[in-house]
Length: 447
Length: 125
Image (tube, rainbow over all chains, first blue to last red; front, side):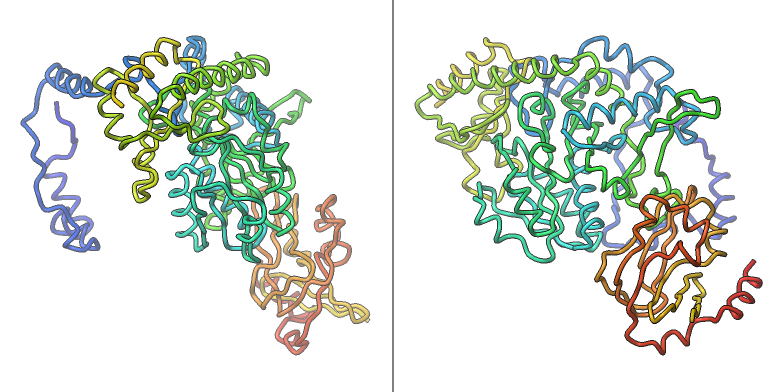
């Protein structure tokens, strides 16, 4: 089987037509010293069966989350997904990764996006939501960019307790867009300290709840401080199941609230594709990035759904669009929406309670180990523990017993020696009491 | 006495009883079609000639409106929040966007008079 359709003759003709000698000429703008010189060392072609066997052997090197005692969270959470979710999202009517380009022809797609927006608004306690973004980190960055447009100011303050990869995405997008960011140290700051970090250029402060280390906070006072300084409060959430139990960003007075939606209806998927939830106040509607679904009536007076406010978007407003991410994570959004509909308000609350109860159980077990110190005074379903030795080494050793013990904080905060012994652990409804007992037992033995 | 000054970008400044009103011309609103939203600047903000001072959103496009001269925004037409269609109905009267103070009135001489603008748009269209 040939994988590339062009013959040598085709290539010669293409080169002649566009006036180059060979394909290499196309890369002349890339500096010589950063080009890869080595020829790829590929084996000769293999049969389909041989390729399948080869790939399966590579895949076996992975450790599947379901095959071990699993305590890893930190932005991607292992939750149960009802079989009905998969059944619904695999219906052929829904098989598109995107919002369609001739959207109004797909009323079913628009209707579920509309329902999704309603679910997001209620989940976050906010007035409106968009039809989703790529993931939690890009939704966070888009929220900060929206704050720059709304306030016409050019600096954002990033909490030190935000997921380090979220911080990187925000910083990256802000910097290339010509804005400034200031990252606070990774520790709790009281109101007086926070007041001092705002200056006249500050457009927004972005915080995470529960934060990267698992602390649950109430940012109501911070919202007031920010508003006094004519800045916005942006709250981001990596574990959206927590919103079934804790105070919503809306109740705290957040101006924009964003979240990673993976926890509802979506599996771990090696870190993606995921979906970003983006919610805000109605008055900031026109600065909202991405797609928005609206409900209206057609010429016969029947209910119909539309993509609305598209004049803000890049296919019309080009370089002045509110965002250059004018798509959404359609299929992940559908999975979220299907699972959320099955859960309902009560179901979500129950799910959140179970998660917290499991984490409490783990807290009790781990806190009985003499050499373990619990770092958190508050948490939802994950918290940080301090070990007497390097956390990454201990995680490696527990892997021998089929335990993925959590995230060594140093993996994401490598430059801070204080983090070397910190381990971020998570429990969900998937964690059994046996898992917790086994983990605590093995950890105690190692220490 | 009322005087109109027009820019090549189809903004106007109307001087009426020593007050400067700014908006977009009747020709501009015809070109844009049904206007659904006008985004106006904060009162007190200042702009240099050519800077984006407002945004007009019609059903199919969102267009920037440029400051015709150096100016400071004194007040904005709050009617447009609820009734942006006023711009379609009476672009050069009730559909004004904002009132301005202009420090250097000589800049107005660089703009077109009503007659010159009428000729100008005939050539444009």
